[in-house]
Amino acid sequence: MIEAVEKAVDLDAAFARHGADFYFSMAAGLPIEERLEYWKKMVHVDFDHTSSILNLTVKAFDPQNAQKIASVIIGESERLINDLSLKARNGVLKASQDEVALAEGRLSAARNALRNFRDVSQEADPVEAAKLAGQLVASLEQQLTQLHTDLMTARTRMAADSPRMRVLTTQIDSLEKQLAQEKQRFGSGTAGGAGGSDVANRIRQYEDLETEREFAEKAYTGSLASLEKARIDANNQQRYLAAFIQPTLSEKAQHPSRLMVSALVFLGCLFAWGVSVMAYYNIRDRN
Image 1: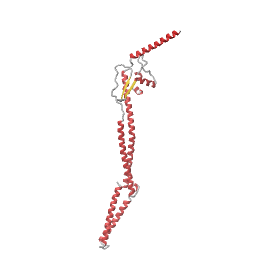
Image 2: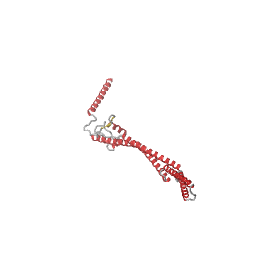
Image 3: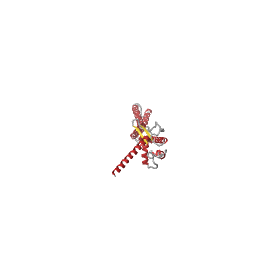
Image 4: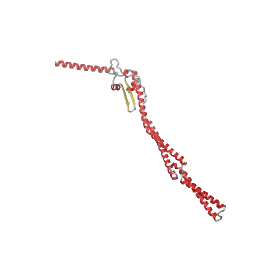
């Protein structure tokens, strides 16, 4: 604080010896330790624990210097407390911000993996695609069963080379080929680059990616909530210094008390004189 104040106020000049006053003044060129001891005599800070109010008192040989020193002390104190409070707030938020960045990166990676899987497999949802393929296969099998029934019924009434028989046979062949293709597609996909060629493999891989994405989203949401809570707590715990009474200019010299100092010096001199007289007479009587 002394070094900070000296940048704005010349303390050697402010506390220099005035006339014959050698006791209360500060000699020039003192080391920092002695300057600090003198500083403690001239600057006092009282803290009221009940009201949390700081009372700053600065003594100087000139009221303007005392006011200027007090103003510089308040300014430096505000800067120091605000810097410490800001560092503490940033320290509290940094851990939460790191968690958010980590969760955001994990969520982005999960979404990219799921998008790459869909690009390769050309399926938005293999589970739904498998359901639709199963429904289609069931429908084709039902149609094929009905055609076989119609064919068996037609054989009892028509010749084998009749137009109706040829139509039914052609429809059955077509449905069997389509059914074989659908079963092959249902049981063996073309997403070899996605990690497997069968539906079960694609579904398993898709579910793993979807689970990872959902977990990453929940983790990201939780980290954002933690960051917001940490920000609120940090704001509530923030400390600051506010000067509601600016340094005032003294109109009357209050220190030192001239009458008291003069009386103490007189009493001290009188005591020393008395002791000297008593010592003199005691020595003379002995001789």
